Amino acid sequence: MAQAYSLPEGERLELQGQSAEIRRLKAKLKRVTEERDILKKAPAYIAKESR
Figure 1: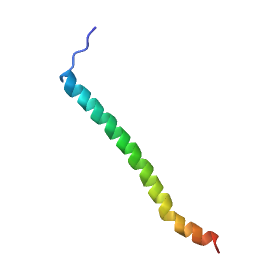
Figure 2 (figure 1 turned 120 degrees about the horizontal axis):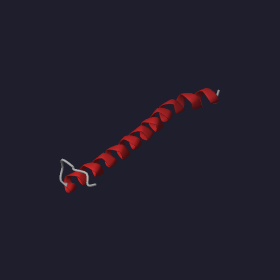
Figure 3 (figure 1 turned 135 degrees about the horizontal axis):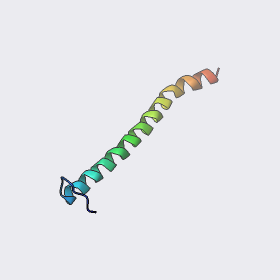
Figure 4 (figure 1 turned 30 degrees about the vertical axis):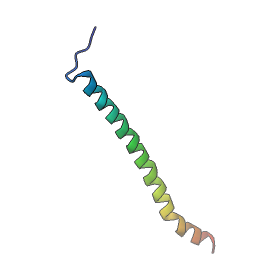
């Protein structure tokens, strides 16, 4: 059975591609934010350990 779509196939595929890119960018943003937070804490940790 064929499924009816409200958008033409080209537009639907473009939206799917954009959604995939948004998911990828959100994942990358999360990773980079975590890295930034770790690096912000690193100087204090190093200073504490070197005493």
